[in-house]
Image 1 (cartoon, protein in one colour):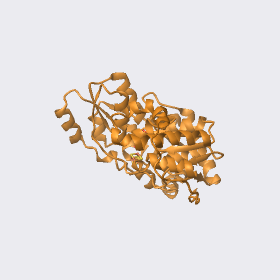
Image 2: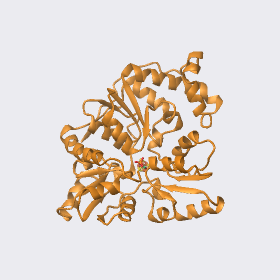
Image 3: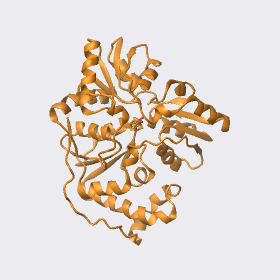
Image 4: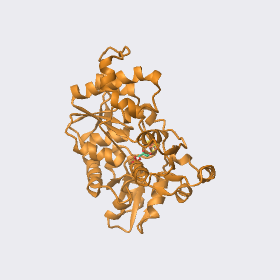
Length: 349
Ligand code: 13P
Ligand code: SF4
């Protein structure tokens, strides 16, 4: 069971912070990165927040881990480390910081807490969930195990600690195939994302038994969207996430985790590219490759969207919201996460 400590009544001066010469100097390099995403008129509001958050990180011995879907103000402004779900778990496993602020969704913070029971793991908004994690419970996994005796259970990290605790091993989209094959079994239960399971099944001879969970963001993409993109921009490079429906993946030029998609952009430098995933990622990658044209198919994840720069500041000022996992559950979930970390990143990840 995961518990979250209710916000203590810590008061702090929440008035807008002044935009001073010192703030301008401290944020000058970030200003360049955020030129496209933050208009000049907003910078005097954003810059003091970035400066204050960076100060708070030093005061609290804190590190900010940001998922690739965070808005540019967090991703380029205050994150110490950025990446996909696997990278966030690996970084959480390696950091010496006492406090981890997880700028992503709840299962990511929970994974960091499972790995680091002695550290303080904070998430700026407790409501940042995930449709995949919410679609399956520990009881569902126990039922499936009973229906398929002896078949090992692989669960996507986009699940609760309770579900991880019922699993043999976790995976992310960056190592799902390698994790499945690491078990040496002819059949595996692969939970809960139906489309990721279908994609893995195309990459391995291991028989995959799936579950009907979906990502509410990626399930909305269609093959017709891709046809329209190709008609509008002949030669566009289309990169998709394996949480998308099979017909979308079949029509894409590349399928991989969010970090694998970024690596493809860096390696191939296409004149025109479409990242068929959450919109903020295109903003972040476009800031790094201003010479490339990013066509934004724009599907927003409402959960990721709950994490904002002002909330990151509040989180560090008040040390909320702390994510903890009951140790009996965490101990079992940790085994599944550590087995995944031992497999590492896959060849396409
Ligand atoms: P990645 O592990 O590829 O970053 O994906 C996480 C996620 O939530 C995608 O929707
Ligand atoms: Fe979950 Fe999909 Fe949002 Fe990722 S994009 S956090 S899988 S709902």
